[in-house]
Image (cartoon, rainbow, N blue to C red):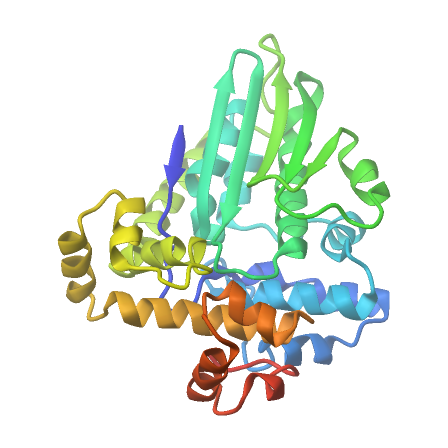
Length: 347
């Protein structure tokens, strides 16, 4: 069953549980990476990371922090190394429900059902075919640099699922929505099964023994209470802004088109242009405003997080000429793109 979630976030950001950031400073120190530089480059220096079960921070900023740490460590497997060295980090209400689920199949279903509470994924699904099972998820195409995010989140989910699988579960394959790293040794060591790179989304594939026993950590009362809590939290996350974020994703998927129109986006969303305009008007925004916002946020990430030439960034964002991109950058950031390549940009 595919569950498409419109990322529940304001129009200018995506969110991830604040606990996702806890432990990054420790791993940076372990790797000799200046954490203050990571915070500065990602724009997280002004954010307060709370250990509460309910707080969230910017997913874009968290992803940027991982990419910055990866560059400073000169390690394109930094996100996976963090999990392998220090573990998946503090529990949240979703991982606690997974820990105490009756069996592996239920744990997989719970992961898919409630993952959106932890991070704004663009889609997530749990599928079963006989003895085979799959959990797949992906992030918004608006996130420009996300290799380390893919590694960190996927490895966390895998580790937490395998601790309850026991002998009744056999991992078969892992597919990652990131390019192949320079060395795959760390991936081979961590997962112990074939890892494929460049996939359209992250996915974990398992074989479940139909005769396998229950989860040794099973606690029905605690599991039911956690699921009820997660149901309430999921309802709280379904806000009016969800539709705006869904349109943002649709725009980001087509952002390189220099003549992108509302008609094309509406067609991709299986909705009429008039209905799309009406729904956006109800949220006090327009297609043109969202298109400009997606370009602005992706431009900020391209300029700060990559070494791509200005002309290539302009092309990827659908500008027909570099001059048009330069004028847009001056409007967005108050300076030309060539002066925006160091430090986080306020978006």
